[in-house]
Structures are given as C-alpha cells and as structure tokens.
Image 1 (cartoon, rainbow, N blue to C red):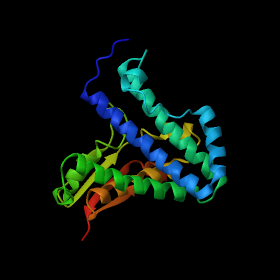
Image 2 (image 1 turned 120 degrees about the horizontal axis):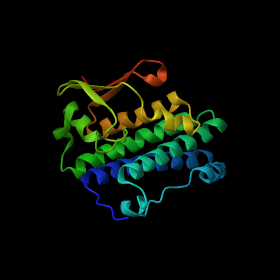
Image 3 (image 1 turned 45 degrees about the horizontal axis):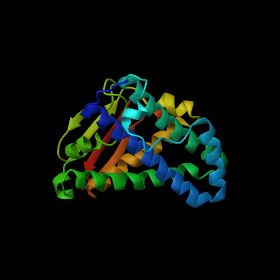
Image 4 (image 1 turned 60 degrees about the vertical axis):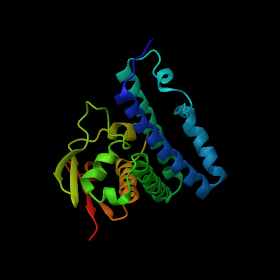
Length: 225
C-alpha cells in the first residue's frame, strides 16, 4: 500500500512516541525498585502485549491498514500495554502505583523542558498557562483528532482550565487490566510534571475526574502565587 502521510499523521505519531517513552520511564523505575523480578513480570506482559517497534518508520507500521485505522491501532497498543504493565506490577507490589506516578511525573518534566527547547522558547516565554496548555497538546496523546479531547473552558495568562466529557483512555486501561483511577492519577502526574518542565511557576490541579466518579473531568494550569 502506498501511503500519503501528512504533518497531522506524524504529529499524532509523535504523541504516541511520547506515551511509549513514558511507559519506558515507568519500566525503568520498576526495574530500579524491584530488580530481577521486574524482568520476570515484563516477560509475561510482553507475551500478550509485544514491545513497540520503535525503529520502524510510520509508513511501515501502517502497512496494509488505512492511515486512520493504523494510527488508532498504535494508540490502542501503546495505552493498553502501558496499562497492562502497570497493572501487573500493582498486582504484586503495593507501592507500584506510587513508583509509576513518580516516574511519570519525572518524564513529564523532561518532556516539558524538551518542548520549549524544541520550539526555541524559554521558561519566561511560557509564563502563560494558555501557552503551556497549547504546547502540551503536541505531546499528550488524547485520542484521535476526531475525538472530543480536552476542551478549554476558561483561559488567561494566569489560569487555564479544560474539561473532558468522556475519557477516551478508559477502555484501553480497563482492557489492560488496570484500575481506572490509578491510571488517571499516573497520567495526571505526567501532566503536572509537564507544566513544571515548561515553567517551574506553573502548578497543576485536577478538580474533577470521571475515574473518581465525577460526570466529567476538569483540570487547570495556574501560575503559582
């Protein structure tokens, strides 16, 4: 199949790669914490959810699939495998969720710093929560472009809030055997880290979460006073 890939397809793939890199950061933390037992757990996870093909170009990964279907499949594979990995460790270790959240936060910080560097910006250029949210959109996988992802509900330099009316991740996380709220907490730790990585004065708060029983999610970046 001859694929004509445009910027939006590579943009989506970049977000998927960020998810896979977060998964790798979490796995590294598990290996550091749990040693050889971590490899045994991962071996079992990978029997059902194989490792990603990190060295293949997007064109090869989408072979014999429509572009939309192929990218959707990559999102499902990445998010389900990450959830399955976390679920496997949480099943054995009571502190695994905390270890994963800390690793996700650290990876978020790295991504935030990388984002402003790649865009030729400085933290001072991003002393604006609306800009920080915009930049995060290039890194955080939040469904396909046709999905209703995060929608800004209030925006200013000092505070930007966004909501979700449904969670596009829930089905993948549950299919991977993970606890819905645990995964939500881990991704929110990444978001908090990303904001800090962009500018240390940006704080993050999750006010409502579907995973916690609310009807919708509500989150915000705020400049610390």
